[in-house]
Structures are given as structure tokens and as C-alpha cells.
Image (cartoon, rainbow, N blue to C red; front, side, top):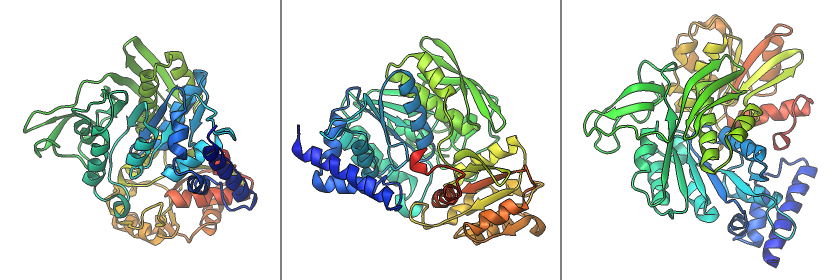
Length: 461
């Protein structure tokens, strides 16, 4: 036994218990700071003991959902899973999750670790956990004041990926041209996944798309099929670089309103039909990524199908709650691409009164200029009222005004909880409303609902 490691784990557990008993939060990050003060190498030591290794999931959008999907598949395969399930994805949050899921003697209580990593924390997380598999989902602009431009994130990731040993598998969404070029020529083996389906395409690159030019020569990309933002089947008009061949592909993607989706996975062992209880094309990508990762880990296809069939949304990600006799559908928004895909999904599911909650705290990004890159014009002709709230609700109301939303359909509200109560008051009994919050607005919304007995606290979900 490593006495220092054991003491660090105990300190982390004790601080988490104290924080929760004092009602100061979920204890999902601070215990990692406490534990690391006792033993700065706690994460390294615990990660090395995980028998089946660590999987690091990274990307701008979909990390929490994909990691939860993969963790569920692992559980269906009979593995005990260590997982930062709350989405606390900085090093301190990952450390806290490991400490919480280890014995008092410093032994991880899991066969495999599924780790969601923040974009900025990704290099350190990889260095300290030495993952067996890295799953890369996408790269979009997000929180420019924190991450910088896309090229900045890509450069940092590139350094980390080039230093990987041949024992680490890099599984990459090849539909993203930025990730495809970033993962070329690595010492570590690369595997790819993507969509091969022509039913859900965009007519042109959205305004918020980031990778319209070739990363090799700078010439424009053209798309045989464009699925989501800049994700698709592309070729460079200059050097001829094109999407790499897909090791795992999804076809026959069917989006079933706001309830579920189905798809067929093309695998080396033949087609695998999957049903997932979340909607939207972006969740088809998440399910495809989780399934491809599970197969790369050698898990049986039946566990993939069962795990995805049993999956339910993570808190705030298409979460359905009933409050005062009304049904609320809570869908996190955090950047232009994600917001646009949520609007696309809601269009398919049918119109309903919508409350958009915008905050500008550190976890949201202080710069809210990204709202002007959202295709808010899609809401102009929606036959429902649009409500705005949160710390920067006025900024959202202004964006909707410039998008052409008629003043009689625009209802600015204040911050939570008043905005929630006013919105629910306006919904008809037994009616449905959509709530689209940024990250900290989502946490505050769920805090209000938890205090009123509607949902569990997020660390209990």
C-alpha cells in the first residue's frame, strides 16, 4: 500500500462528504484539489492501476453524452466503470472522480475508466492517465475567451497526439477535416468513424462552420455530403485531400422526432442495428462514436446494442421533467454549432414555446458574441412565443429582434427562478415548453428544480 496515496484518497472522500453535508454543492471538483495537495501524483497512480486501461473522450460538443453512452456499454459488458459522470472534466474533477471510486487503500474500484476531458485540460489528462484509447469527437469554436481560436486548440492537441506511444489507439471522427488531418502520421494507430448516409444533409455550409478550407494547402473544401456544421464527406479542390476511409460507419440513420433515433452500424462482423433513446443527428454521431470505441476495446456487439438501448439523456441534455403539470424539455446550448443543431432538432419535433437562458459566467465563456453566429433566423417564422432570460437574456432578445422575430412573439424575462415561473405560468395546463440554457444557467435551473423536488441534484443522476 502507498500510504501517501491512501491518505490522499481519504482526504478527497472526506472533503466530498463535508461539502455535500454543508449544502455547498456536489463535491465534484474541490475534493480533487484537496487530494492532489496530499499527493500530487494521485491521478497518475490511480489511473495506472485500472486493469483494462483508460479511455479519454475529447471534443467540443457531445463529450458528456458520448462518455455516458460508452460507460453504459462497458457496464452491459460486465465491466465495472470509473467515470466522471457529473461532467466535471478538468483535472481536479477527474481526480475527484477517481478518488470517489477508489478504496481507502488507494485501489480503483473499476475495471476500465471512461474519462471526459475538457479541451484545454486534454494534454495534461492524457499525459497523466496514459490512455489505452483516445476518442476524438469534433472541433468547433467554443468560448474564444478561454480556448482561443480553433487552430490554438488543434496545435495543443497535435503536440499531445504526436507524443503518444504505439500502445494507444486514437479513434477519430473522420467526418471532421480538422481532426482527420490532425491525426495523420501518428506513431499511435489511428482508427476512423463517420456517417455514410444521404438522408440528413445540409444544402450548404452553415454560417458557423469552421473548417471550410483544407488544413494541408488552404484551398476550399467541397462536400459530396454535408451532415453537421463542417462534418461530412469532403475533398479539397486544391491538393485532392479527402475524407479517410471509415473503419466504422453509420448508415440508415432515422430521426424519430424528439424521442429516439435508430441507425445501422457497419462493422467488420457485419451490420449492427442500434436504437437510442435520444433524438437529433448530433446524437447519432455520439452513439456512433461510443459504439466505435466499444468495438475498438473488443467489447461484444450485443453489449453495444443493449447499452445504447438502455441509455437515457445526461442531466440537461434533452432532459424531460414535469413541473406544475407542464412538460419541460431541457436542452443545453453552448456554442453556435450546438445551438444550430438544437434548432434543427426542434424543427423536426414540432414547435412549442421556448425559453432561452443565457449566462456569461466563467464556465459559459464571458464573451457572448457567439450568439450572433447562431442561425436565429430559423426562429423567425416559428408560430410560438420565444422567451429570453438569464444574466445575458437581453443580448439574446436583441439577437432575436435582429433575426426578424416579431415583437409580439418576443418575451424578455429576468433571471432564474423568476424567468422559469413566468414561463411556466404562460404554458397551458398539460402543455410542453422547451428550455435552452447555457451551462451555468442549466445548473442553476436544475438547482431550482431540485429544491422544489422535481429532479435530483446533478451529482446524483
